[in-house]
Length: 467
Image 1: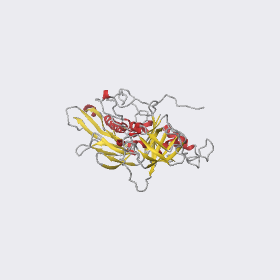
Image 2: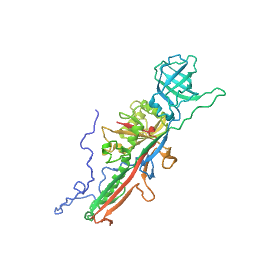
Image 3: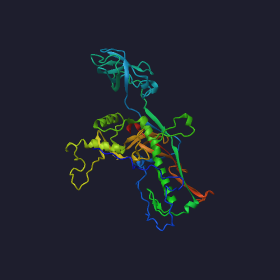
Image 4: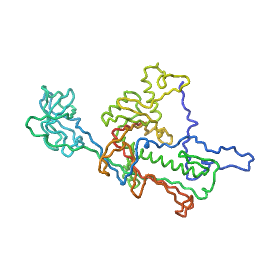
């Protein structure tokens, strides 16, 4: 009989962070007139373990300064030319033919300002319904034309019918003896992308009187802070929360597309937004069969064909990959557990997971806590993401600010900085308590600020797995 996890008792989603200390934060209602005092544990129990979710960008990216409100870079275009969905009025067996290229493809060609990136003398391969041909280009009627004429090599002429959906690509050129050279030249095709940094802020405040109150429970946080002062824990947790937001903002940020709200914020292009618009998207969950991964590999073949890739996945996706790989084991009986530690000794732990696999390319698997955390993306039923495929290594781009080619990780963060102002991670104390002497406010205010943007280079090499 299949079991299930009961909905109660469940996990607590009520935040412990409040602007003031309350009874839900700390035990304060002891009655010392009672002859029986409680037997207390001195140290606070860390029931949720490590609660921070940041680490993704530290693993796959880098940080570097920028001194502008706008970050621009150019990415290489395709080296070779190919057009699809062309048409011709010439019928099968014709010795010559004229083809029309869709106008939408002309604007994205390497020779966009002069029309087609096809020139007289080039040799092409044409495919359509019913057959394919090799031909030589004999005419391009006008510089801004979207048509070209060819002469077929084959004795039987055109093999496909008029009105077919035709594809063409250039594979070379041929010229007669004593003729002039190639007419015209092609300009490099590059795409210009940009992103703008956003300013993130946070603050923690505690009054001077409350700072003088010593607690009786020793508190600690994930960054190593500990002590018997309750406000110390809250300040550390504010810092940890801000650290997480520095990463999640780079993942989730979107540009302000609502013109009615343009005065409120500018927005930025986060990783999910960029990959969802310029990258590859797997909809409806995640791939669970080799045929699914074959489709992914086929798509990556059409992109940058990066040899090594890292999969950052939630728990269900990770188990799905493990189960798929385990099913490929032909040495065990159906339903057996011969994969992992193959000796299967009773005193040994059985490894039922995999760290990666190779299927055309190398794929390494890593659990992404952000997708599992119930206070963040974990458990979303609408708009959920089950994983992200990130190419490993770096790529060469033309940096518009530096004015030269530079090697950059596919994912990296640019923060605002100059010789006099570094806004990567600023923190300062104001008020008149806790050592601060900046105002007459009877409190200590710890301020946090960062100004940054994420650059997703070569988004066409990424894969976003959406639920």
